[in-house]
Image (cartoon, rainbow over all chains, first blue to last red; front, side, top):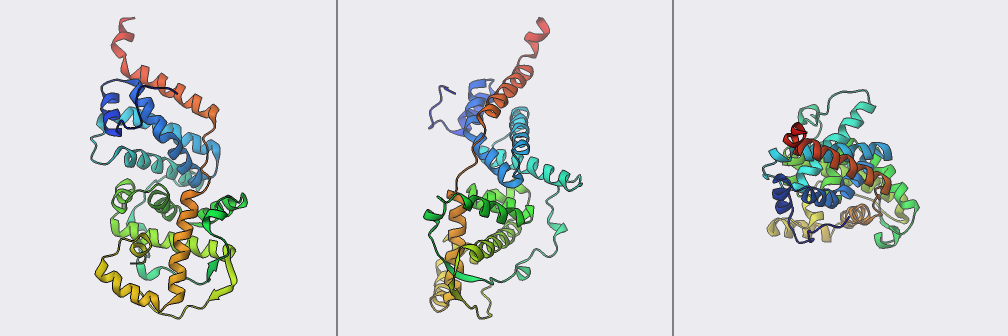
Length: 214
Length: 78
């Protein structure tokens, strides 16, 4: 869709124009973030219809709440926050729960001491650059993501895939930074374990001597 | 600590100590390397493309809602 805004126009400027009633500015913002929102939703939900629902709910919510957006967080963090909550809502609904809480108090075990140590340690047979070109890899990546608890999955996707900072991820999910770090480490280690069991070279497997790094 | 090390954001003073340990701990080096590769795979993997048909529908819905919420006076006048 052609519009008059160049890629250099900042999100903040587009938000200002959209608030002033310019539909073109709102559409430009939608164009910028719709793929990211859809991609995040697909990775959370693995179901196209549900991901479309998340995208639609997210941008309708952006439209309706733009007036109240004060720019304390960046626009991208705000949009990903709305999308994250919409995706969680669908996951909870699937599980038959009605709450969308990400509260830390529900996870007393989420501290660094409870994180499992790496088990299968081996260099990978191929570099990531080669691996991304293999079609079956997406399946492997998605399966590993699905095995993560959604709380950990969201933190990993926002921080490591979407590139939010620890602070932004914490703000987007209403978590403390400490909690984001624990969840991130848990997610990274579990994904590493899962992927290395498939991609690691068994002939180069290493034995880890028990010790701590904290 | 491992997070910060993977991200390259560790305090240099702490990092030095950690580096020393890492130099003598091959399994740890491999774990860090595995984690960095894991992140790269997810970050650089093929993105999910939003279906074109849905995109058109989405923009239609948004334009409609925009009109409903942005010109109430004009509508009332009609």
